Amino acid sequence: MSGSNLALKLVPRIGEQNAKHTIDVKMSRQGTRLDSKKVNSELFTLTYGALVSQLLKDYENVDDVNKQLERMGYNIGIRLIEDFLARTSSGRCYDFRDTADKIQMGFRLFLGVTPSITNWSPAGDEFSLQFETNPLTEFVELPDHCLNLKYANVLTGVIRGACEMVQMDVTSWFVQDQLKGDNVTELRIKFIKRLEDAIPAGED
Image (cartoon, rainbow, N blue to C red; front, side):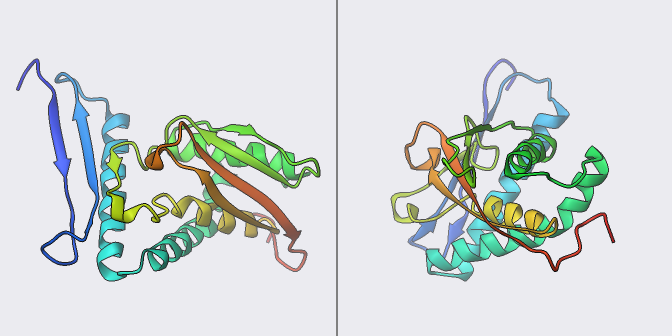
């Protein structure tokens, strides 16, 4: 296949033979030289797609899948924060703007993307991360019957879990999603309260 596109189409079959839940994950690679970081990113994307597909098979209700993805992300976040602190030598966040900068740094460190920090609320307790591309959804197309699926909801859980480990209660949600026709993917993050009784990660 030299000189032509190599197209891989992964179509996980969900549920019955009528493919009530089907996610198409499409990947193309040009040429014969492979970049290891790009290959790892593509493998991660496909692996995540297979995970979401399996959850859709296990939980017929899309809302339950959204909750499971958030819980999984939370469990990842409470473990990932130690690695983040070790690799960045970051100290405690001084305010929520400092938190926003560190969350942005985390996306760059672990997913290789740098979202824009934008749309701060007047009170400074809420902001958005805007993604030109989301590596989790780069090769994904949602069928019409899965439009209520929050495909990358694992990211909201990661943020909640990581922030909780540094004494910060936050909530986050997607307000725009390129999988659903928006020009960008926008993740909104809101500060709720300080968790004074918790021991900050890295300070025990």
